[in-house]
Length: 163
Image 1 (cartoon, rainbow, N blue to C red):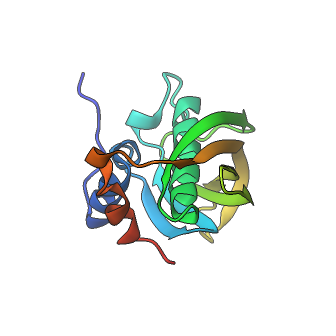
Image 2 (image 1 turned 90 degrees about the horizontal axis):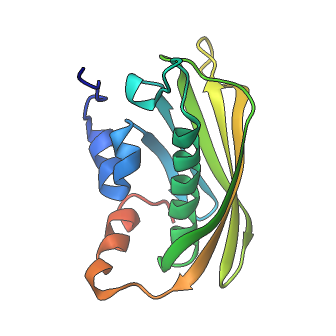
C-alpha cells in the first residue's frame, strides 16, 4: 500500500530546507523569530496512527522542531540540542483536520532555553485557534559549537527568519 505524501509547494520546499521532518509532513512555517515560531499542517494519512487520528509522535516532533528553530535563532544561530521534552495530548485531531502550532520562549539563557509549544485544531469557519490538542515544554542546550561540516545550516534559517 502506497503512503500518501503531501504535495510539495514553495512553502513546503522552504520548510524542507530548514527542517526535513517538518517538510515531510507538509508543515508550513508562518513566523520564525527569536520570540515566536508558528505554522500549520494538515493531518494527512502520513501523520495518522491506525485509528485515523494524529499520531502523538508527530505532535512531539513538531514541538521539538519548532522549539529548536526558535532556540537556534534566539541563541544567535549557535548549535542547539533538545535535552528534555514533555508533552500532554489533550484531544485528538482526525484525518483531514488542520492543526495550528506555536512555540514561545519561557526562558532564554546563555546555555539553556525553555520553550512552550502548543497545538490547536484550526476552526474551519474563522480559521482561528480551536480546541487545544497538545501542550509541551522543550528544554534545549544552546551553547554548543557548530561543527565545521554544518557551518551553512544557519544560513538557511537566517534567510527565512524575522530578526
